[in-house]
Length: 324
Image 1 (spheres, rainbow, N blue to C red):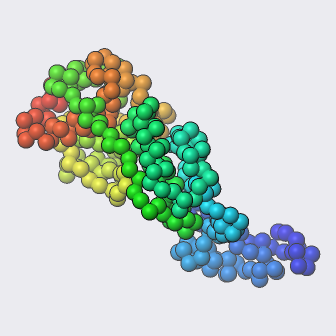
Image 2 (image 1 turned 135 degrees about the horizontal axis):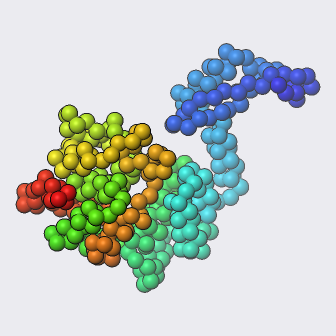
Image 3 (image 1 turned 30 degrees about the vertical axis):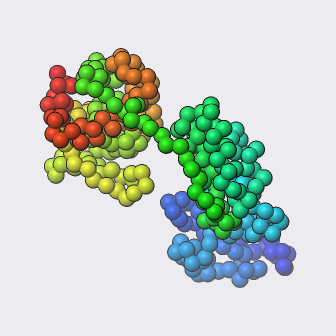
């Protein structure tokens, strides 16, 4: 209940709740007197918001704010960055990007609109960064600049660049290769380590090519032992996928101890696992692997390398050897 601004009398205020894009939304539908709102009209409004016929209150406020700012001044990179941040989920990724923006982009581009850019502006930043930063770091910084501008274009806040941002090539081949001796050392270190869950997770990366996040999310319901495949839910950038359950991967999963948790490799209190860095780095050190080898990401590439070796590697026998 509330007081009507028009009459000064008490009136009902209707709210609607619904899910959109997986998120729970609660919007004010309107006032009983001022907006002539009724339960039926509120229900209709809810249906139209779910279907996208009318925007959510948050979307409406966003567009109004964007229109107001566009009228007040230019959509500089600083302004676009502030809006872009609001669309990102809080977390480590956003924290890292905010640090990159403050260090490398704000002073150089913050006061400019994308339409003010010339290719030389970006080239100078790229060349200066390459003097002291790795190619991967430079690429991350330029990717962030690209994402901010693309966000502005998508929202109709600015025009795009008249040129393509050149980014340094990143060569990760040396960090993802293991020779046969190194691979055997890795498997022996996994076998000797006390953390069997993480050991099996590393084996699965090697014998299936799955990403770390995919294995963290993997549940027992996703494994079809009878038909011989694994369902990967919400993989990077695409719809659900299925991959073959190789004999080696089947051996790993059959060896994995089941708990009350739905997750194959559960974390604390049976929840989804979020980190294995401490254990995988301990195993990497015990195996005396190269310093720049990335334990999980690298094993995916070793898997791909083995598949591409024209049958030279018998993965099933390799798996059995790792359990010996």
